[in-house]
Image 1 (cartoon, rainbow, N blue to C red):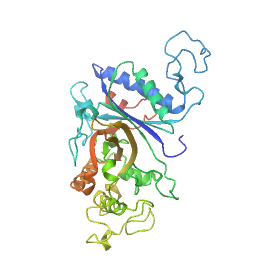
Image 2 (cartoon, rainbow, N blue to C red; image 1 turned 90 degrees about the horizontal axis):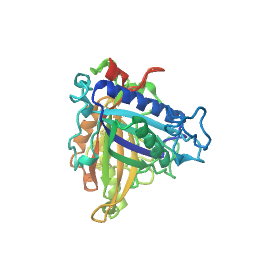
Image 3 (cartoon, rainbow, N blue to C red; image 1 turned 90 degrees about the vertical axis):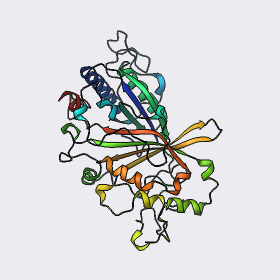
Image 4 (cartoon, one colour; image 1 turned 30 degrees about the horizontal axis):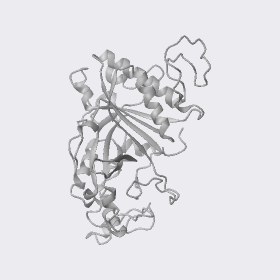
Amino acid sequence: MLTGPALACLLAAFRCRDRDRAGLARTLRAVSAELDALMAGHAPAGATGPAPSGRAAPGATGGPVADSALLLGQGRQPVVATLSVGASLFDARYGLAGRRPAELVPMTALANDRLDPARLHGDLLVLFQADHPDVCVHALRRLTAAAGGSLVPVWSQDGFARPDALATRGATGNRNLLGFKDGTGNPDAADPALMDRVVWVGPGDGEPAWATGGTYVAVRLIRLFVERWDQVPEAAQERVMGRRKASGAPLDGVRETDAPRYAADPAGARTPLDAHIRLANPRTAGPEKAMLRRGFNYARGLDAGGLLDQGLAFVGYQRRLANFLAAQERLKGEPMEAFTRPEGGGFYFALPGAPGPGDYLGRGLVET
């Protein structure tokens, strides 16, 4: 297990090359076996070559090596992986159109978007999370090797979390590259009943039977214009965001965990009516309208104009994609748009966990 919230991530989207559903099933089985091995800290599934120590593996006769040398001397580092499917997997290739999750569609331009086709969509999406970035890179190499050429990379984005030295008990431990806390107000992932209401698709949700226990995933690669943001006084930044920069507290509160009191501020005297947190979560709906958010920072060097290409890899999990889309509609025209520009990502559906030994991720989708 990870020691806490992951400090590194790697998102990788792929196009499937399999010619038929049987081939897709074989790919999903191989990918699942490799993800299981990675998360358990084992050598690649089916590997027979030299072990990482350089000693021959028992019965070695050649074939894929037991592991790359990337992590030699570091021991087996834990990694968490999530496998999701995109809307494109449900085209005519595999006869799965009738099994598409009800709300799964390609991501089109939303608020303030300028989407780059080279950083968008994909049949499959894998999210690796670990305490070290090289663990994620290593995991991706192993996954692509296990797929045996049946998966073609579409786009990838690595990311990192910035631990907050000012974090207090019960507070968010990460800051984005604008300097503000990220993930405040998330539902408690340790509460199974709450997760059933907010995140996991249930048997009565009007989804295909195989989708029960999965969740909709919204990925947004959001460029942050940090040079422009750095010219804005802190007090003005706080009004754009709706929170204090140092503590993460709402503008009418003291602690990060304080709930903003919008009903007592109908004119927006304390928290502007167009503040990001007020539009994103007006707190007029129950927890069923919430989502579980995870954000990682990224830095891609300089763009063609010499500006820092930095941003936020946003990942949101929700029982209904409509909840995410409603939030994006509310955010249209917000002041934050002057400092952000979503450029990639996509909508996906995280596959339910394999129910038992011998099963694999996506078996209910491709076999039943």
